[in-house]
Image (cartoon, rainbow, N blue to C red; front, side):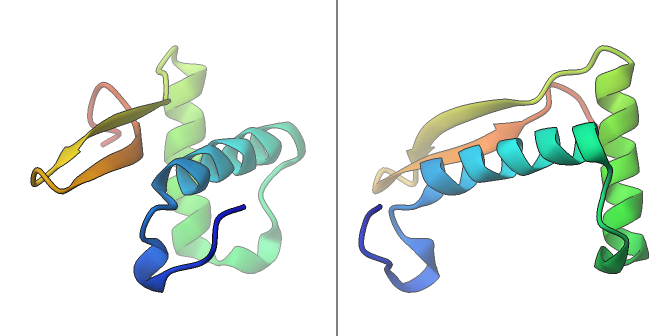
Length: 79
């Protein structure tokens, strides 16, 4: 693992992959109950989107000509 920097500078790939792994785990075992209604609502939307054939993928791009930015992307609005 890289040295930690303020605002997770240089950690976007690791964070994106960790989020995808966490979502996959929650899809398998369910979301922890202690995360609150907002998280549960957001997770339910993602779960329904994926169940309907939607996809999430890790993508990267150039951020303002200074950084590479990794993120998880759905090809349409989750509504």
